[in-house]
Every structure is written in C-alpha cells, then in structure tokens.
Image 1 (cartoon, helix red, strand yellow):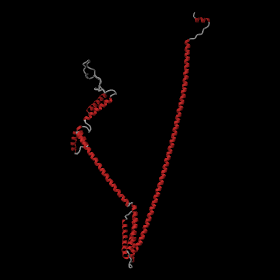
Image 2 (cartoon, rainbow, N blue to C red):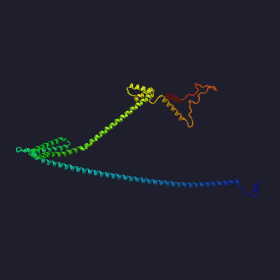
Image 3 (spheres, rainbow, N blue to C red):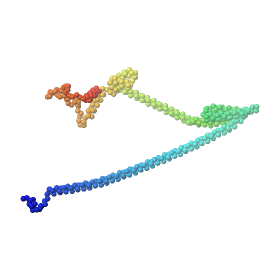
Image 4 (cartoon, rainbow, N blue to C red):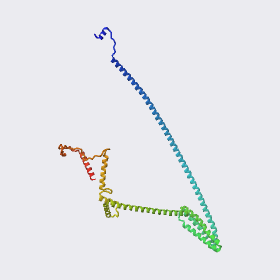
Length: 416
C-alpha cells in the first residue's frame, strides 16, 4: 500500500507545496509588481514630461509674449517717429510757404515802391520839361513877334505863336502816336523843323535889331524848349520799346564779337579734329590694305580686280567680302583650314568632357559591340559572319528613322 492510501485510510491528509507552482506564483507576482512599477514609473515620467512640456510651453509663450510686446512697442515708437517726422515736414513746409509768401510780398512791395519812385521821377521830369518849354517859349516869342511886327499887318504877329504852338502840337501828336504804337518819326521831324525855323528867325532878327547875345539866346530858347520835351518823349518811347542804352549796346556788341571769335575757334578746332581723324582713318586703311595684300595675296589680287570691275577706287568692305567668298568659299575670317581645325578642337573638347576623373578616353571604333548573326565557323580560322535574309529580326520603324537621322548627321559632320 502506498503512502497516500495509508494517509487516506488513517483519515487525514497532510498538506503539500509544489515548488513549481510556488515559483510560477512568485514569477507572476514579481511580473505584476514589475508591471505596476513600470506603469508607475511611466506615469511619473509622463507627469514629469508633461510638467516639463508645460514649463517649456509657458517659457515659449512668455518669450513670444515678450517679443510681441517688444514688437508692439517698436511699431508704436516707429509710428510716433513717423508722425513726428510728418509733423516736422509739414511745419517746415508751412514755414517755407510763409517765408516764400513774405518774400514775395516784400518783393512785390519793393517793386511797387520802385515803380512809384520811377513814376514820380518821370512825372516830375515831364512837368519840368513842360515848364522849361513854357519858359523857353516866353523867352523866344518877343523877338519873333518883333520880327513879324508891321503896323500895316498886325495879324502877322500871330506867326511866332503859330511856330511855337505848332511845334508843341506836333510833339503832342508824336506822343499820341507813340502811345498807340504808330510811326512817330515824322511828327518829331516836323517839330524840329518848326523849332529851327523859329530859331533862325530869332537869330536873324536879333542880330539886326538887337545884339548877338539876344540873338543867340532867343535862338537857343526856340530850339531848347521843343528839344527838352522831345528828349523826354524819346526816353519814354525807348522805355516802351525796350531799346538798349549806349552802354548796353556796346556790351552787347562786345559779347557778340567774343561769341563770334569763340565760334570761329571752335570751328577751327572741329576742323582740325576732323582732319586728324580723316588722316588717322586713311593711315589705318593703308595699313589694313598692306596687311591684306601680305597675308592674303590671292584674295587681294582678286579684290583689286573686282573693285576695278565694280567702279570702286579702293577695296571697300563689301568688295573684300565678296572677293574672300569667291576665293576661299567662306566669309572673311573663315577658311578650310580654320573650319577643320575648329572641328578637331571641338572633338577633342567633347572627348575631354566625356572623360571620367582619373581615366583616359577610350576610342570607340564601332558603334556595334557584338555580332547580330551567328558565326558560320568555329575554331582558330574564323570567318566573318555573312548576312542572310532572315538571320536577324527587322528593326522597327522608329529605329530605322533614328538610324537614318544619325547617318545624315555623321555625313554632314564629315563634309564640314
């Protein structure tokens, strides 16, 4: 009988512990504790990370708020500066406008004062001329009346008044003509003729009836009165017409002479420069002709004959171009050797550009790397393959067109 059976027979069962189950329970408990610890640590880490993130976000937000506040203050300061600048500019413009208005008003006032002074002076000058005319008439009339005195013809004594008054009336007519911008020279000429007639009468009668002083004085009075008044009117006419004074005309003539001398000197300089340029151009043309004759003798000889045939005395650019095309077959500066050298250089450049760093270009003799047809013989004495119908498949239409285009390009490059 086994031990378990004896235990059951005896009526009691002795407790037992399985080590495997205990180990599994410990492992489960340990695993649960580890998971709980990991969850706790993870939760604490997340909480710490959230706290750190919240602090970082708060710091960033504070920095952003500070930047926004600084930017707002800067914008406000810039706005205030712009407003202050606009206010200063407006104040300066207003002050400049006020200064300009004050200056214009002062200039206008000065012009008015000057015009008033000129008008007063001219009016005074006119009054003095009229008074002087009247005085001269009073001085000259008695001798003229004495010259025309005839007891049998008293009415002749009105002739001196006619002469002096006629001169006065004609001078007033000259003033009216000048005011209306009409010819006035004949009025003034008549007035001077009347004045000289009156002066002649005074001089003749004074010498015969009185003394020379009386004759000369009265003759001068007959001329001086109308002369002074005409001088006044002459000044007014010159002022109205804007005529220059003697000094101004002299300065103008001097300036015109100076300008003429300067113009002649400038023309001489321009002629000398033009002559020098033409001489330099002729020397360059002779040098060019000598170089062409030395470097291209065949083309030069043909160009000379062609110029003569076309009626040109020199080898011009069109003649040289045509001669070069006739002899060399290309434009001036081009020839067979130049074109070939350029093509060789272009191929070398293309080969150098296709070369990888550290390698040398490999010359490709055939574009086809392998035979498209099977060899007819194996062994050491191999014969080249022979193409027969059906050996290879036909090219598609696009491949045939591309091959034709490539063949044409190669032919064009070989010809050039």
